[in-house]
Amino acid sequence: MATPTSLQASVDAAPAREDLIRAYRAMYMARRLDDREILLKRQNRIFFQISGAGHEAVQAAAGLVLRPGHDWFYPYYRDRALSLMLGVTAEQTLLGSVGAAADPSSGGRQMPSHWSSPELHIVSGSSPTGSQFVQAAGCAQAYRFIDPSSDEVTLVSSGEGATSEGEFWESLNAACLENLPLVYLIQDNGYAISVPVEKQTAGGNIARLVSGFPNLKRVEVDGTDFMASYQAMAEAVAHARSREGPALVHAMVTRPYSHSLSDDERLYKTKAERAAEEARDPIIKFPEWLVSEGVLDRQALQVIIYEVDQEIQQVTDEVLHAEPPDRGSALRFLYSDKIDPTSAEFEVEPDFSGDPRTMVDEINRTLRE
Image (cartoon, helix red, strand yellow):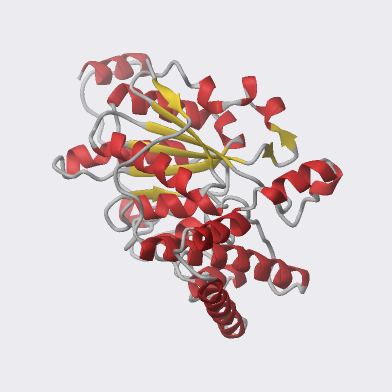
């Protein structure tokens, strides 16, 4: 049976002071990048924006626990703080936002928030939600053929709504059958766009819904609490890294901004609900905890805020002047520039031999062979 849900995971080692500060910097930068993109979208200087606000704490915790360039990452469109923790920069993020040719993720060919980095092992996501699950399961199995001695782990991330897709269940079945080192990070902000979780997921809780899968470790956590999220992610990753099976972290987060700028949450969220979300905002809670624990004083906190704001302003000024992809380059990298499968090079005369057979006979013969 599945490992029982744990509300309070525990690990031996707490993050170092420097790691806590780095996590806060990434969380704050993620939020300010969201805010900057929203401003640019309203100025019609970018064409799409989708936010990771409210998800920053658990994402930063995941980035701290896992190893970029060693482990593998299949993120989804809200994983802004995770990508920053893994090594993606504010400049690289905004180059993707404006669709610049210098965008390292896709050369301006993908939508914003589709991060990619071969060096960091971040695999570019597809826009259809949930498509990353089966790909991640394949990646988690591949180490057995490429480097069986490796202790690498694969992380796949999504919102709660995408767990309704068939790919989620297919991948979970394969991960449990094969005992794969795959960690699912399900970031549940209570809504699949405008559909509340109790109307989207049977029972309203994905961690309970998957309780029958063998060898699956399940951990539920307040994803707006950085330290609780760090403990949960550390426990899940340790389970997968020790080859005990896959793990699923169900992180309850908030979504203080609308689903995207194509959505208006005020049409379906009450004022009371939005106020309750604001009280759990990790960008407010975590720095207060850092100050109360003596990790930072308020002056040091303001220095980080100033540095991040200045960096984002400088980067914005630069990327708005970045060159777009060349005209006529849309098909570049889609098809080989060396091989044309429709060319005469592939034309051959049929060579008939042997006794004539029906198509059914040929298929059966092929399957036997």
